[in-house]
Amino acid sequence: MATAGMPMVPTLTDNARADVCIIGAGIAGMTTAYLLAREGTSVVVLDNGPIGGGMTGRTTAHLTNAFDDRYYQAERLHGLKNASLAAESHTAAIGRIEAIVSEEDIDCDFERVNGYLFAAQGDSADVLELELAAAHRAGLPDVYLTERAPLDSFDTGPSLCFPNQAQFHPMKYLAGLARAIKRRAGRIFSGAHVTRIERGASARIETSRGFAVTADAVVVATNTPINNRVAIHTKQAPYRTYAIGARIPCDAVTKALYWDTGDPYHYVRLDTSSRSSDAASGNVLLLVGGEDHKLGQADDGERRYAQLETWARERFPAMQQIEFRWSGVVMEPIDYFAFIGRNPLDHPNVYIVTGDSGEGMMHGTIAGILLTDMIYGRENPWTAIYDPARITAGAALEFAKENLNVTAQFADYLTMGDVTTAEEIIPGEGAVIRAGLTKIAAYRDLQGTLHQRSAVCRHLGCIVAWNSTEKTWDCPCHGARYDAYGKVINGPATGDLSPVNN
Ligand code: FES
Image 1 (spheres, helix red, strand yellow):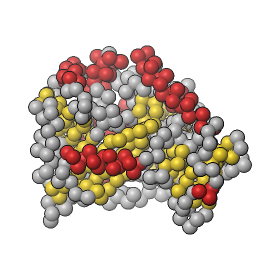
Image 2: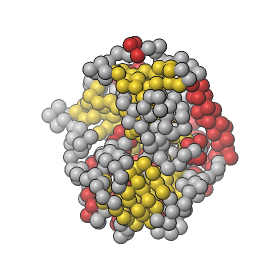
Image 3: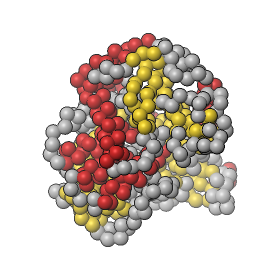
Image 4: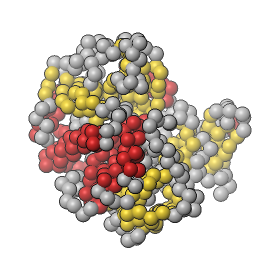
């Protein structure tokens, strides 16, 4: 994932000390590190992989205050005051990114564009009227209803326009943040796999290579927290989302952000950056996403990419062949608001960021603003709505639904495997095999060698599932992911899949 301009960062080769240690070099971790460093705090950022190597590198980067779970739903669950605070925080996040881009002179193709929300096929447009009124009540008076989104190739029907949204290139932005952090003496380390956080007034963050960081505060910004064993994982659920990119003539689509009301919803934008534009042909890149499903509970990525392409071609017939496709994982909170703040039941100097929903760029930036205020002991009006310890009474049904779904995954212990014997696994594929009372995650590499690990997730013991599109083992319960050989690549698990017989 080399990005032009991304500074080289070293691995951690000694113990270190900082005011604040941030785990995760995605948008949330890097924004928090930048805003803290800007105020004179010494920061160390640790990441298992490269900067932006997690979900930030997989986003389509819609910068928007068009709340993707809808303001009328937020108001129903949290009340008008809190829905208004959500709107305020999202609007502020776009503004903060714009200010950082300007202040640090970051070349990341940031530009203001309008956003359009329209009814998905089969959905009533009445929901737009509901959302329009709720958006106005939440403090977004500029939102208006228009006859259709500004697309010639596709009549969206009535559409809500959210003016003054934005888009940018997330990796170029992270590269700019990384340079700005380093200029302020912040230290960023990749290849630093955190295995343990020893809490206390002086927290100790241990890594797999034996080096540790001590710090007065810790921010865990790893998409889903690696330091919270249970509590937060009962309040959010992991979903996989898919995206494709194809060239299209630059005059075929009005530059804007587009979303439908489907569940899951489709999201569309143009990438007109110099990297993605082809000046000779006049083509730009059309990015289309959607087709989400619960992580680890479907292995039909090819079908979902095909459905996404069909949906896109019906609406954007000038689209050329697909050049890019990728998928990412979003953590969906049961009550719509992200979890940003003190880690429940932990030492007060340990903070988490998770539950980003489909708005990781916004919640990551909100986290930077909010956590900087919290660490400096400043009041912030958004603290309560994003409090990870909050209990939202109206979300009890969703809580029960998601946790029943997790409980149901434990039935995998009783079922047969995907295949009966390892001989059925072809090179480049994996499958779960029953082995007495437990299960084996077996992967056959392209040379034909079989690699076997326990299929029991190292977080809370669900059985992982093979993802033939990504070539990973995905846990259907709380979002842990492992590479084909069982090496952990995403929390909440921190350890690799166990060797068999252990
Ligand atoms: Fe929780 Fe696997 S992620 S059991």
